[in-house]
Image (cartoon, rainbow, N blue to C red):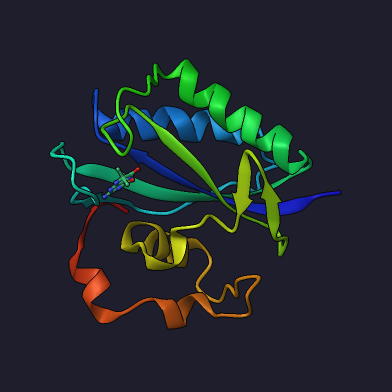
Length: 161
Ligand code: ROI
């Protein structure tokens, strides 16, 4: 089965833009044909209480034949290849790859919750997602467009088209 998946990318250490470029290269190997689409890159202020550098965020979408857990394993492998170490919960990282959506499936496993639990509130996920999937509807039947508020646009700064 070929499924449309969306992945959020985030980095705030060790040249974040380069981290995202390398991650996009690695993700293209998971995509069927030339199905990979990547949003603009955005600078965003860190969410959460931890004092840390600003993030660079983006979203990638692609068609994949991997099962959800296989895809999660592949994403975690890419994170590790790019030197991710988990120092602190909600702390800085070289690369974070979160599986946002896997077709219209709702998945609840010990290692994996899809749709991603925080995505509906996060400007740095919704706005890049809308770059590549403006008419998307989530599995809960909510349109992506209806989740994006005007103020969310002010929270992000577009870096690269
Ligand atoms: N804040 C921003 N702006 N972008 C992220 O990708 C991000 N990721 C996180 C936490 C620490 C919650 N904050 C973030 O994991």
